[in-house]
Length: 73
Image (tube, rainbow, N blue to C red; front, side, top):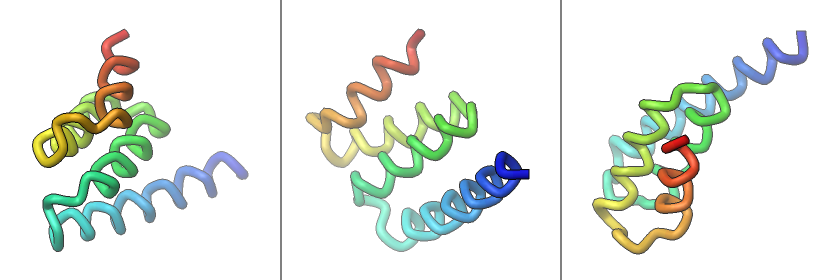
């Protein structure tokens, strides 16, 4: 049951972050948070896409670069 609640909360957070990205598509922090949520849900391709979007705005984002490196494995 706790896992289900955590999954539902992650879905809610993903929905909120997706909406935030639609409102401001140049927010590196939002893309990185979205990527982390996808990564927690084992949604690897979605996580990579979110981190790549972060790098479009801030190519030197350590968080996004480190995450993409980690997700290559």
